[in-house]
Amino acid sequence: MQKLSSTKLIATATTLLVLLLLAKLIALGAWWYLPSEGVSLKQQGSYQPEYQRVSFANMLQTSKVQNTTTAPQETKSAANINSLILKGLYGTRLNGYAILAKKSKPKETTIVAVGEVFEGYKLIAIALNEVIFTRSGTEYKLSLAEIDPKLLRKVSKVEERVDDEAPKAVSRVDIANYSKNPASIWKDIGIKEVMNDGKLEGFKVTRVKRGSKMDTLGLQKGDVIIKANNVPFTSLNDVFKIYNNIDKIDALALTIQRNNQEKEIVYEIR
Amino acid sequence: MVKMAKFFGYLLFFAFALALFAPKDGVYFLFEKELSKYDVVISDEHLKEELFSLNVDGLNVWAKGVESMNIESADLTLLLFYNTINLKNIALADILKSYVPTKIDSLEASYSIIDPLHVKAEAVGEFGEARVSFDIVERSLTLKLTPSKEMLQGYKRTMRMLKKDEDGAYSYAKTF
Image 1 (cartoon, rainbow over the protein chains, first blue to last red):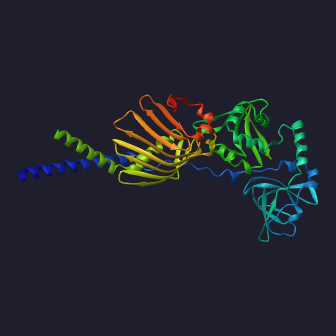
Image 2 (cartoon, chains in turn green, blue):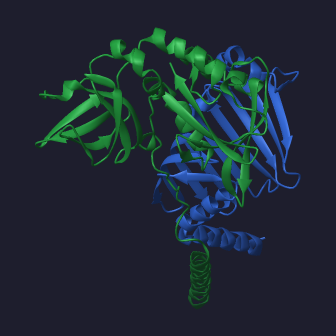
Image 3 (cartoon, rainbow over the protein chains, first blue to last red):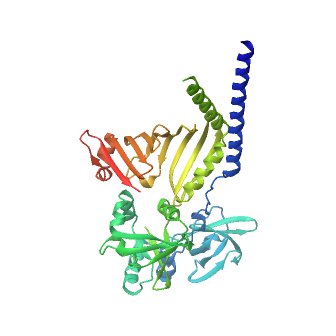
């Protein structure tokens, strides 16, 4: 009897061992077949550092700005930095240009590239609303000159009449209203993705409601928006990056394709 | 009868052994790969293998390149006969806040061999309580929602998309 039960026990143990071995073999087969790493997100560079800023208002009204620009700010005191006016800037951090003038001659502007020297100050970087110079090992920041809003309105009226390509003013109030009720965006404008070989090429405007706020943006049915601030759209996330940071943006340039030609529409957000 | 019991005993033992040895992270990576076909990517997560389950923490879910939700933790249990996935503290992206409350406390999805044609899920959150059933064969989804006060009062536009049942619950159906 004892012999019989021990035989049964051995048989059960053997079966369990075989099943264990079989499970391990299947697991090893699965391990060989299954991927060894997951899908990682291809992070694009932050949108904000690549942001380009052009103060068109400053460039457009040199004669009137003379009396209205505020003194440029600086973080460290310098002998002559106050004598300079920053009228505009363009580019990414280490690659771009600043439009500068002397306070004594505000009409005479000079375009200075990063790395170049102006009045003894070497331009080393472009930021969102300011440029950074060095002189004798000290850093100086020069902010964009402010414009009298009255003058800006005057210029806008002229732009509307004579220059379709001039920057368009966008109210932050309108943006806030659209943010509160995103569904109203899609009532006023229709946009769909344009894909090519699985890659996003841009966003096509399928309709614009006449008389709506969107209608004032200068976009037309059939336009394909391909870049914002000269950065190509690669995913919907690029749009949301702008949407989420709209409070920090003063100017936005959209590059669109219209009738097989590229065109840039610039917006000043205020 | 004894033979039958023995057979099921061995089968159960085999299933547990398989669940024990299964490369759970590999299964998860396969799941990620399948999701990526639909332009859904999970990022920044940390994986930790347990005996019969896989714990994943800090998941950021991106759909079509847009960060859509953050999930504090997910537990995947794969036992062949009964598989579950438990998600805790889900925060939907702000872009969705005008359509639905963005906090979901928990979501539990399960697949059991007892009901092999359906995947079932239950979720609880600021929106109320929801039960979802997905028919694998017909590829149809049905949702039953018991909405919260916040959902009823603040998200009328979304509620209009649901059909009110006689029992007071709201339902939604979609076939893929």
